[in-house]
Image (tube, rainbow, N blue to C red; front, side, top):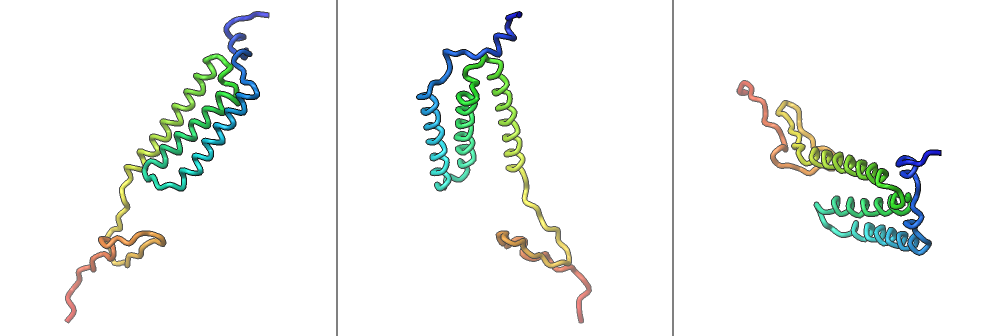
Length: 139
């Protein structure tokens, strides 16, 4: 049998394996991050809610990938795959957030039909009613 870089790449490193105490510590950290997520969702922090939630979720995902999926024990090629996936997800999230932030408010074109607000929409005084069409004066 041949041993080379490919066979060595798939071998786990026993000196980097986590013991029972390590597994319990990582589990406690994951539980603490979950509790933090629950407690923070009750606080009003406006525009910071999404970045904070994504940061906590990313930390939990990284802990799970490193310790419970044993990526910490593998060679760097598996870490490169994980890093590539994280970069692609970050790019997709950034593009989605930029697209939502650059949308403009839909307008209602003037016309002879009455304008009714959508259920649950806030009333905007500028678009309450369209101007009446001009016609011949009545005698």
